[in-house]
Length: 372
Image 1 (cartoon, rainbow, N blue to C red):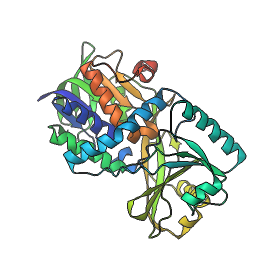
Image 2 (spheres, helix red, strand yellow):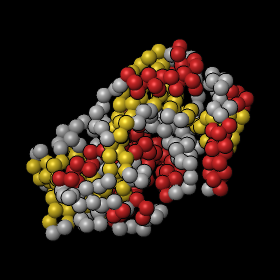
Image 3 (cartoon, rainbow, N blue to C red):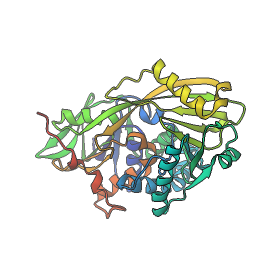
Image 4 (cartoon, rainbow, N blue to C red):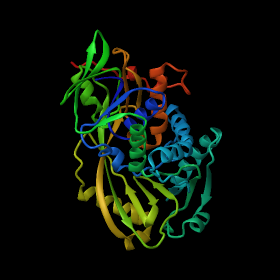
């Protein structure tokens, strides 16, 4: 069977791309080598940290802001189609300081973000504890980001996929793509464990595993996997209302008194094992931020593998040497945040529409390597 588009990857960005293409009337096949939503999209805390993640202006900051603004409409649209609530909660984020140096750094970030039109401000330790009374008395103040909320990452990914399926996308699990079929430098389909599938365009959105597919096609991208470990606790008491972001640790309050704490960073591994060292380190950081967390009940720990690039920018676009092969990977810690805009941008590229913003900085061409 032949398709207009084949999407490789059953995570949040693969789902978003398939959904955006289906909305435009494309006949789409989505292939996932395991279960859909079984890797990074399942593991993510779901922060929409368009302000919290960035310390200076740049193309990724602008992309993140635009994607964050899409979430209210996306949440409603996906709920109507899939029946899934992505649990969009917008109670802001506090990026906290423990020292004068921290304060100076955060106030510098506040200035640049204000110049870009962000709603952001400095609040004192006293003001912070009025809003979040259980936070540590050692915190000296915080950068307040009222527009940075969070969603349920697995719910968002499933909502994109189920909405895509409702619009006619064929979703096949446990089918691994070995390589992209090329004819005279043009992508015409994929070779899989179940044989060949053909299409007019191929979109690679396989997260940290994307480079493996391209390598088998004699192409190499400058990407590498980064493992992140997280844990969660539950409490009958409301320990937090807003997301707390600190050096090497964040706390995201979810519904039902659940708090997700993350995340470690270990580069160049596909292991999803959870280490004692990683989790114990997170525990110490979380306890320093929120002493009352020691009274919470342990729930579970897990790890996810995130795709990173050498310059920290994702790849979004058509391959410069292989026509009709598009790549959307390297989102690293911003895969959930960037999912809505990733789907729309890739669909715009495929339809050759005018882009909603300049994506030249995310071009695949900047790092394309041929194997030695």
